[in-house]
Length: 158
Image (tube, rainbow, N blue to C red; front, side):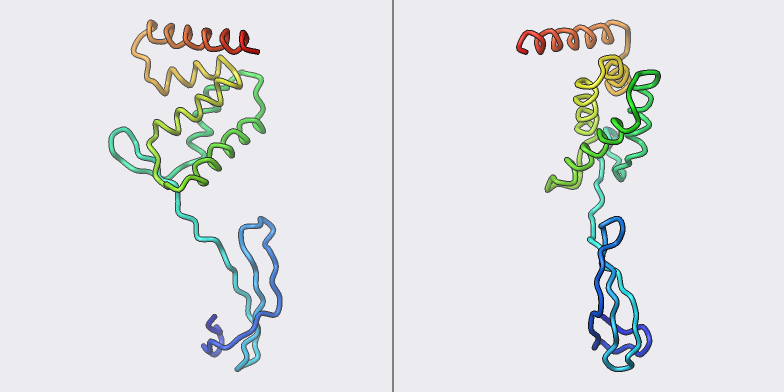
């Protein structure tokens, strides 16, 4: 590490501490030439997750965008913000653990729908109606019927 005072590369680490958020390490160093001390931070270099949109555009993964969609679907439902944040954390963690760093938006939408399906039927159908862009009431009813069948099937296997 280059000394910010004299520019020499000879220094030693005096103290290392993990940051409060646990995502970086703070190192206190002393230059062996000028004996001055300075602080450096070591961070993990993260490759941002990219989402491939249906129209071919790519945009960076956004927790806020997912949160807005889920919040709309869960509006006036008895679902806490804590549960929604955990859902978003789980989805982001799944994506980060994957070797790929680019995902089709359809995968992201399906992950959200799967979790909403397990959480709340009304929120699931609301999200599905926007995500799948239902053209008419028939498509909406069809999705609702599939949801009801899957829930009955789950209850029969329990």
